[in-house]
Image 1: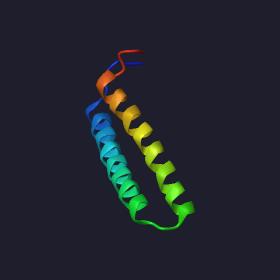
Image 2: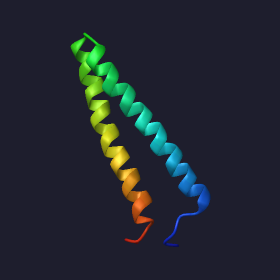
Image 3: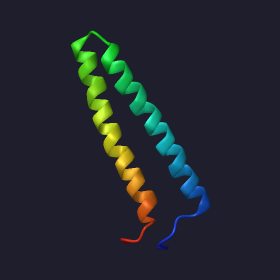
Amino acid sequence: MTKHLGLHETLDLHELLTFKNLCLTKSSTMSVLVQDEELKSILSDDAQTGVQHIQQLQEFLTDRGRNE
C-alpha cells in the first residue's frame, strides 16, 4: 500500500470535509432554535459526532498515510 493519497482521493476527502462542516454548522445552529427536547438532543448528538468525524478526516489528510 502506498503512503500517499492520489489527487482524486485528496479531493474526495476535501469534499467530505466540506460536507461534514456544513452538517455540523446546521446541527449546531438548529439545536439552538428548536424547542422540542428530544430533537434538541438528537441535534446535539449529531453535532458531537460531526466534530469527531471532522477531526478524523483532518488527521487523515494531514497524516497522508505516514503511520501505515
